[in-house]
Structure formats: structure tokens, C-alpha cells
Length: 344
Image 1 (cartoon, rainbow, N blue to C red):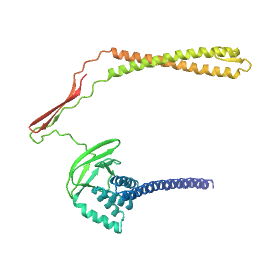
Image 2: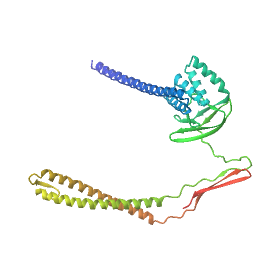
Image 3: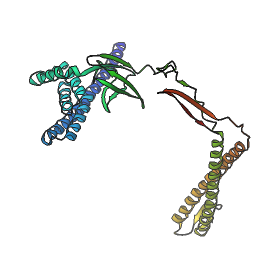
Image 4: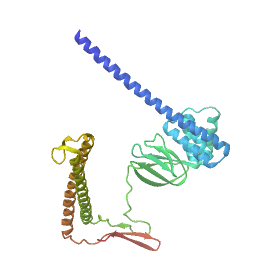
């Protein structure tokens, strides 16, 4: 019976754990849904105002808000409205992509017919780009967020020369490409762009010498130690003097308040009616003693730090040759020589 009871207890614990997980998942879904609903409601309000005022700035705000709602949760309603706002602003690549997403999510009725008609009209002006890169990275085109990686389908972009930007982990990287109507190509941000070193048109080669590391910053560190240590020592010395002066004042007052004093910093018996004042003086003395100790520590540490800095400054340093890098790039009728570097 004990064994059965133990198993029953474990089962009960597991059931409670499962229930807790389900509750957390339900709560998370509710929060996400609530954020989406709030964002979509704001976007619809902005759209209504844009319809009333017919102001491009109002339509841009509506587009931004529909984009925000779609990033939270892509629904046929949000993607359709995103496409409609983009079409108003002549951002037809965004509109085509949004309309296609809305149709894939089950858009129907008259709005679906309008979406199909728009896609059929603009398809010839578009190409598609499949983007590969680090998960979670964001793809921006023409200053607008378009998608987060990984992508489920290629991006729709205008034909011509286009610039894609990847934003990931605080870094940005751009790639330029030429897009033809009806074409589909791939841009892989996992592959680093190699610098040209081979022949270029005109029969010349672009050459780049490696750029050396900056000169040693040992002297800068030595000066920092010297000046910082000296400042700390001065501050510590001033603290010791101020604390010492205040200690003398509080000890004098404590002596006047005590009938029987236990050393210079304590009071065994206070004078009648002066117990509270005497205790206050004892507390102040303890505080200023601790402050004085901190001042001595700062003075010592500052002196040692400044001494180390002076030793480093006194050490002779070998003079280093100028560190430079040059580049030779072909131009029409000649070449351009670039020079950059550091001088000690």
C-alpha cells in the first residue's frame, strides 16, 4: 500500500506540473493574441484617419502599424491591410508579397479578387530573392523591414539594382544585386564577400596590402595609471584630513556629554538628560573612523597605482616604424593609389 501511495503522489505531482505548463502556454497565447489585437486595432484606426485625410504621412503610419501587427501574428486580415496600405504608397513589391500571403492564409470574397487583380497587374515588374542567413536576422530593403530569417518563401522585389541589408546581433551587412523581371535568385549572408584580388577589366589587378595593427598603447596605459593613481591618492589624503578634523570635533563634544567616558570614542555613563546626544556622538565617531579608514586605503592604492604608472613611463620603448597600408585600384586611363596608416 505504501508503494501504491508513493506512485500516486508522483502521478499527482506530474499532473500538477503538466497543468502548470498548459496554463503557462495558455497565458502566453493570450498575451500574444492581446498584443496582436491591440496593434491591429491601432492600425485600423490609423487607416480610417488616412482615408479621411488622404495624407501620405497618415498612410505611412498605417503601413508601419499593419507591419507591426503582422510581425506579431500574420493573419489574412493583417496581411491584406498591409498590402492595401503599401499599394496606396506605391510600394508595390511589399503590396504583392502581402497580398500573396493573405491569399495563402485563406483570403476570400471581393477583397481576394482585388488582391489577385493587383498581383496579376504588377507581377511583370517584380523579381524574387531567396535570402539565406543566420536565424533571427532581419532583412531590410529600401529602409523598410521585410522579413525575419529563416524565410519560408522568396521576397518580392522591384526589378533593377537593389540593396539588401541584414541586421543581426547588432551588426549590419549589405549586398547589392541586379533583379530581372520574373527572375529568382539567392543571396546567402552566411558567405562572406571576398575582396577582389584577381584581374579586373582593363588588364590591371586591384592589390591591397594588409593593414597592420595600431601601435602599442602601453604608454597610454602608463599615463592613465599615473594620473588616475595620483588623483585617487589626493582624494584619499583629503578624506583622511577631513575625517580627522571631524573626529576631533565629535570627540570633544562626547567628552562634554559623558560623566564617565570609556576611552575617547565611547561613553559608559552620560550626564543627566544627555544620553541620546551622547549616543549620537558615538555613532558619528564610528562613521568618521570608517571614512578615515577608507581615505587611508584610497591614499595607499592611489600611491601604488601612480608608482606603477611612473615605472612604466620610465621604461624605454623601442621606436616602431610607421604602420601603413596601401591600395592600388584601376580607374579610367590609369590607377589610384591610396595610403593610410598610423604614425608613432
